[in-house]
Length: 238
Image (cartoon, rainbow, N blue to C red; front, top):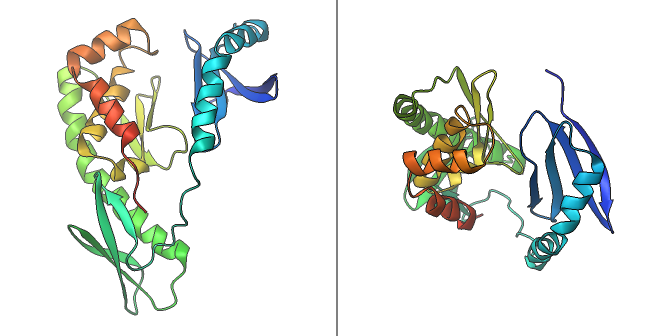
């Protein structure tokens, strides 16, 4: 599959990453942690139109960037004993136990996650063990949600996967009927996970995020806006 073409335009001193895709409507976003500005636009939309739209939204873009600039940098996360990490929206203290075996999570008994590592394990090894455990838990939670909602929505999903994502909670390849979910959803409350499942499956019925998409979401999951706020407001512990 051909990769979407991207280039940078400057809006004053603000770089805007423009990506052209097969889509119907232009989408503008400002993303953490540093206020990166990205625009996804239909293939035939000119740079002149992109610049005009971005200029019209300049005040909003600057407000969002100011919000990110005001947020202090996150504390260092080292995956050591006593550190707090989120699981399904709840803070859990990490209990690190040393044994002569490969790193793995042995138990989760709220409010603690017990991880066993070899003596002298690295931060990366401890992180990998926790992320593998997150992936396993999502792999248990996601299939029943997909099965339920594809029956309700009368859509087919040929494949789903979990991966680390920097700026998205999920994505949908409509042609391949493949859905991706962010590994970070393991940190969020369960209603947020269901919201993302419904959101991505709705894209199998409507590509964009326009009025029809919102109407479908209203019919399937009337409280989706509240769940979206919860998803974006929930703070990862760690």
